[in-house]
Length: 111
Image 1 (cartoon, rainbow, N blue to C red):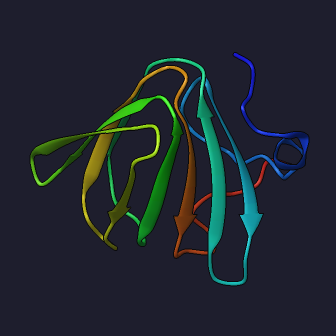
Image 2 (image 1 turned 90 degrees about the horizontal axis):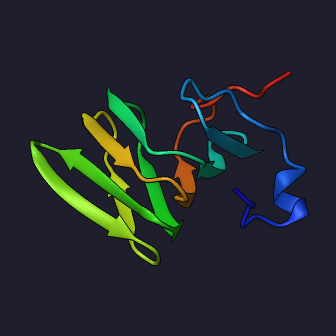
């Protein structure tokens, strides 16, 4: 899969993601992270929680579950996940997004 991200993003530090076929790049702030993520294959993201997250879909589609309700987001959509809210997702191959986490250590950088 060819990346939609320009070299300036692909040259950012990569992050450790415990899912196959997912690549992420991070901009690290003092108390937050901005993450650019792309999925090469269909991927089930297990239920989890973390600090608040704001996400914008750049390409593709994701099925997102929160409080037992399914929401489908596509290119141009955006959504917000409240701090501590349990959620899961099914991400379709080709999905790319921009995420802002109100958490400085949501993801660790690869060495």
